[in-house]
Length: 521
Ligand code: NAD
Image (cartoon, rainbow, N blue to C red; front, side, top):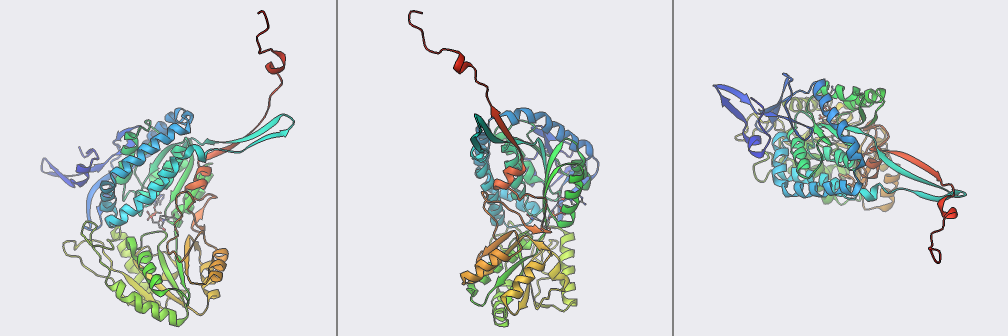
């Protein structure tokens, strides 16, 4: 009864009344080319965080549900793996077209469950679209090496073959983009895929599954199940899954890496972050301020590449930065995603809301100076929403909890240091190593920083250096487990096995036979 097809209308029909009972609209899974309705009675609530209300539910996938998805993926694998890469690319071209065509509808689905502004949702989907574009060129990406005559009349060449059934486990903060970092690469390489998106934002994954089907993807190649730990454990232990891609928090990522490896899977786990932006005395301060506003408060700070620490080199720089940032942070336009002129939406859940407020309390207790306090804001018409206004801390030090831990909210900490060397040391000593940036006009400093920062992605006067799709995305230190970054060439390597063939052909028909017509015959 609660299983209502996931079309645009159903997504916006929040609650149904039948026989005087309130029945929640339930998000289905997508298995073997069709909607799939779990028998699981355990239901997970999906919120509109601007309203602070449950808008639909999803069944928590059981082992049987995961198994059904893996079975479909396993059955689809041989034919899909044998499909020429150029044909697989044609599906990607159609999928690209369909996603571009439905961008606004798609963004609406992302924003409603996540809370981010429509512009931000469109921006993030566009970064996912780049990965699909990359995959339209999969025949080129799978081209390999050939060496003639490695020994007399012996040739050697490499091919990359798909792994089989691959799985993706994704976080709430990019309901479309992060899954698109994974499955377009996996399936265009010839694998089949089971996606387990965040249970907080599952509708975007269902939307993509439908579009893939419309694009002509054979049934079973892409499947979606939704759930929590139970579903994840079923994925990690399933003998027919060859590889697991994970994006999420560090504690869960480490668990996934260890458990997946124990079960002999190839695992890549991209995890949490605490990204520093160094502001040097010669930086363009207006540019640095603009950069910090976007990078710290965009998407309410719920980005793994958000800048959460500004490292000001010298008190003069710090004072100037605080003076420039303060009015901008105070005036950030906070509201629901579907209100116009909004710069920042709510945070995703009550749990996140409480956690972020808890960190702000701790920051104050530990002696940081809260220059802008965004707590307790109320938005007209959305009084129960999980809104936190922009918060700005000055005089944060490396021993403080708000410096050490990932807050994942609209909270920027300014740390004051005396020189560049101290700033670099801070970046390198932190346990996370996802992204970092330096703002300077000096090429020597910038080059030294890019060569010596122990961080996976470095920006020079670029605050959020997310690599484009044909490069690869990945941090260092406790921001990643496993040896592969995601998408681009690293993605192709992750989702394929290398095979090297050494070939010698005995002399045969060429020397023994005659190919020309004989006279008179
Ligand atoms: P999360 O770790 O809570 O959840 C990620 C996935 O793991 C979800 O699908 C969830 O269902 C599953 N999961 C949650 N608890 C689990 C458990 N106990 N056992 C097994 N599986 C479990 O992360 P989140 O809150 O959804 O996302 C935010 C985090 O993701 C932040 O730490 C952020 O930095 C990180 N992130 C990292 C990147 C990156 O590329 N490095 C990108 C986006 C987000």
